[in-house]
Structures are given as C-alpha cells and as structure tokens.
Image 1 (cartoon, rainbow, N blue to C red):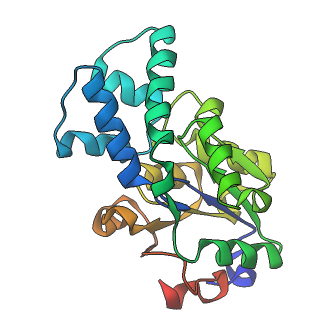
Image 2 (image 1 turned 30 degrees about the vertical axis):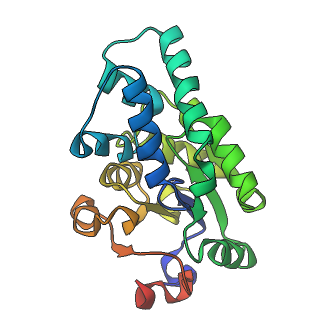
Image 3 (image 1 turned 90 degrees about the vertical axis):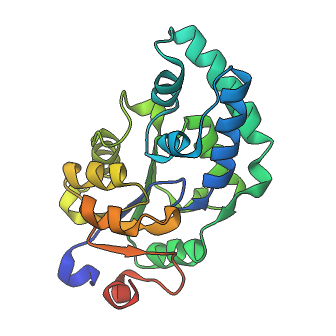
Length: 222
C-alpha cells in the first residue's frame, strides 16, 4: 500500500485501543461505577463498553432509560473514577513514530472517537499527540456511537477529504463497520484480541501495534 498508488491523503484514528492502551482502565472504571450504582455485571456483559458506543448509550444499556440530567450526573461520576486510573494508560507501541511519519509525508491525521470531548482532548494533550491532529471528532459532535458512520463521515468532512481517500484504524467491529459505511478504507487494531472479528467486519488487514509501520510498507508489516 502506498500513498501514491492508493490515494490515501488522510488517516483517521479511533482513540481507545488504537492510540492508547486504555481498555483495562475503562473496564475497571465501568465495573466500579456500575457497582456504586447498584448494578453488578459479569465480564461478558462488561465487554459492551468496548464496542465504540457513547457514554450515554452505555449508561442507558446498563441502567435503563435515564433523563439527560441523570446521564450527566452519572457520566461525571464515571469520569471521576476513570481519572483516578489514568496513570495506567499508555500509548499503543509505535504510534508516535507513525504519527510523525504521517506528518512528514503531509498526510492529514484525525481522531474519530466515541469518547467524551473533555477526556479526548485531555488524553491526546497529556500523552503528547495533540500537535498531530488537524481534526478531532468526539461523542459531543454526534448523536449516536459506532457502528453509526457519522463520526467518521464528519472527520472526513472537517478534513475536506473524500472518504475514499482516507484510511481508518479502529479496534472494534462496530468501528470497522462505521468506517466502512462512511466510505473509508479500514485497518483493524487487535488490542482487544479480536482479529478474526475485525476481519469479519470488513477490515482489510489487522495489526497488533504501530511499531515500524508506515503507509509505504503497510502491506508488508500487517
């Protein structure tokens, strides 16, 4: 895969599980929050939170219909718990070098995540990635999480790049479906151990991390 032959002018990244290894902290935070709200969940049920859904969708899934005021209150409480666990979060190996390479190649970069706006900007700034992204689309910008394609479609619109000239990286089958539905080419990141499911959802290839990865040698590295 090369930018010259395939016409890739932008790369759009999901955040959790793609740019950052945050899933263990997320699972722990959601488990603690739900327990505090009187809801015990088993591991299989908790995997719902890793599917690219917005915080509001997750809250309603586990706690039922909630008015906006309750969604905000519960959301703030969950975020407080998560912030106490942020020290556990690390970058996915190789991602900074990959972002630098894209920048050197004048390939635009964007984030398309179902995470909240506050957490997204705080995270990419704290971990030294903010300078690389021309566009950041979060849950605050859309009504529905993935697999709804809006988050990826909006990222391309704000980049002023046609979706078929963009490559997405996502770690959830719902994210792959969202990117494909929006018209982007898509690569899976198997931070969840879901390589087979990512391919089934339509990912062209699946990678474990970004070490030694560039667009110009992608076909060989994946």
